[in-house]
Length: 361
Image (cartoon, rainbow, N blue to C red; front, side):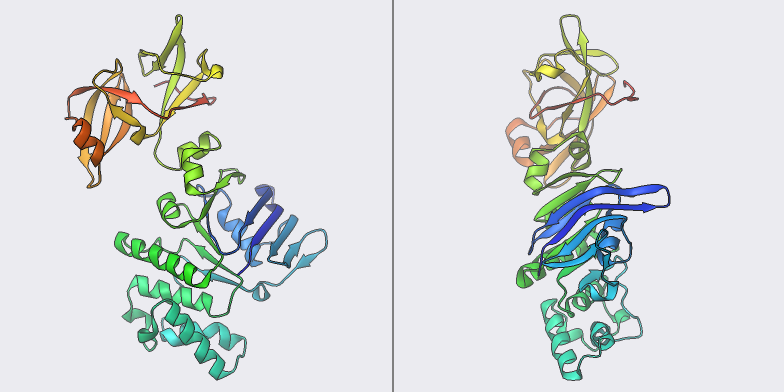
């Protein structure tokens, strides 16, 4: 497998710019998830890699091989780029057996029959589907059909494997199983996988690194899941990955207050730039703890037990905030009851300038 490098890629559809001067270097042998809201350019970037879109500027390389270079007029045809792809809808032929589906790319390449059978059975072995070689797709579960699609992508010894929302159509249990399958396949093959999704939870479970794209198509942050969760580059990353609460911070007399429809005095630490207000306090639900000694009081509107944690909605003044309490914390501090007034404290707070046009709650 090989690394993938996008160097200053620009893609436009008419007058609409989807990607502007976009650069990303995907390391060899890693699973990298492209994550971002719908319409941010994830699929456009992948189509450029596959040769289905022609960028206006930039260079795309896989390993030492240049697939596209706008200045040098290099544009390798899609069928010669040696990139495997797994689609969201599996795209397996319903009238072909598993063996025939996986054989199809090699038959198109006119490979010898013995080579085809050997490579197909090896690919099926990688996804644990050898015993289903003679089955038709309608005899398989959704997860098994997806494994067939992965085997078909693997059979041509691709330099890179692209997966475009490959588990969206599966139920929750199958999604979990397929994430484990993809990770196991990647480890066995030391494959380079570019995984496109808007499902941040799947990305966090699967990826070695995440590339966070903003709505305007720019690369917001690239790093491990820990780096992105614990050290978000900006407000967009903090808000997009995971659940977050934002509370406006205003100057009130000689101090600061949380603007929750009513001003609630805030005495926590703030960075120098936020000392005069005009910022939003950002805090994740699992960084809000129940603290009887805290002067900051909120009412418990609802509580739901989710197995591994409790999920709460609290009213802080007239603003509703979300709190997540781990089972360990629940055993240590106790569980809050609906309708109860509780003290809360904020941990690991972040401060971002209030965005223009934001409405005070």
